[in-house]
Image 1: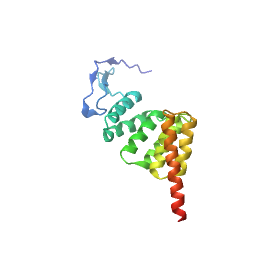
Image 2: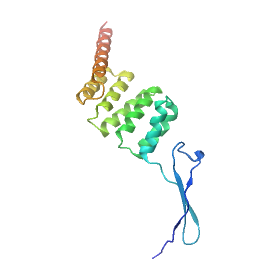
Image 3: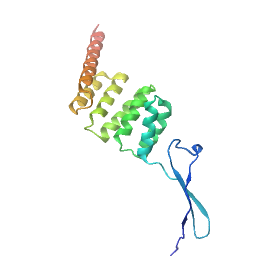
Image 4: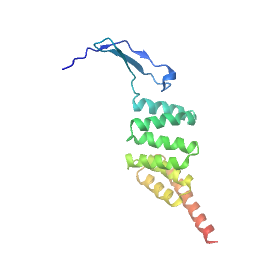
Length: 171
């Protein structure tokens, strides 16, 4: 049996060039029984990455926020909030189809979360899938997302667009 005698060295702060800018991560090095120093680079916690992405998105730095949302969903693929917020950012940068995919994933992770259904509806509407958007708006209302009155108005507007689209196709 081999025994390892590891000595924990004093943590040092990661430099921004080492990735995950804005997150306070400490790198640690250890020494094995031969005196060889091994560097251990910690991975950020998903909630730290998500919080950083949200803070960037809140000040409309969407292009900078997107890679952090990508990292957050990679670190925790079952986090509905990360997928839903990533979908919102994708809509802001004009990547509508990817927004639909991200919102669908959020709905799969949390099927009864009304706000995820609302983001899916908005993504589908922007993608031109009016019938699907109306179904998603109805699901958002059913699952009681925030601002029910505003969501009902958006659903009515989508329905009016669908009627206009049907009339235009018949003409």
